[in-house]
Length: 312
Image (cartoon, rainbow, N blue to C red; front, top):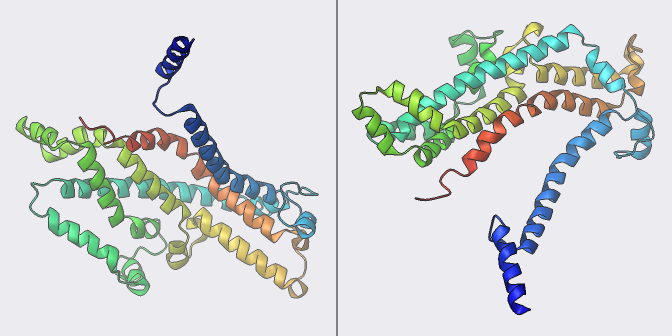
């Protein structure tokens, strides 16, 4: 009987894909599931609040089961009409162009830092690190963008300030050191490959997980940026989505505070407009588009987590 039990335990263990005990695996699944719920529930909560009526928010506050539902917050946002869709287009354009250029600069700069035989690698590493510690400040940045470069009221005013991120340089350099063997670079050079061909034909395909991670971080930075629009953009046709919705929230809050002086609106009853519900509705409109980008980056990021995990 003992032998049969031992053989059964051995068989069960042999069928498992890892050496972790069943109890430990169950505990880890429960912990990770709870963590996943902790990440998902706040966003679901935001969606529920955005559809809650003003009376429900006053009566119950934040609740998963509001007493009433309302589309007033979304009606206020969609009353912007063509201006809203224009801002969506601006944000998509700025994010796409900015991410592409920023990632291209990051890959080329990091490749120079990665190459040990490049004599100026140390200098450019210190140069990039110095800019992480010290910055010129807001006033010089505005003067450079407006006066020196003359980029005010252009898309480039929203792209150039975020184009270079020194932190991404070092992150990408570390990834290249782990995932791209130097012997491969040496072999390519012996075969007569130039630096650009080596970079784009050999290094870039091997570094896709790292590039996807950098691209995701950069896209998030561009998509969520509104401060540069506040500084450099006066033409409403160039407003990104985040700045337009922030301006709308500010205007509605002003109207609510001064309703007695300004009078009622012809289109929306602002006295019934849930201020918190509007904030949540704007958050949903901003978050949903960029959330759909995660599945496209997920497989590269997961692949990047295993790079260097096994030593040969």
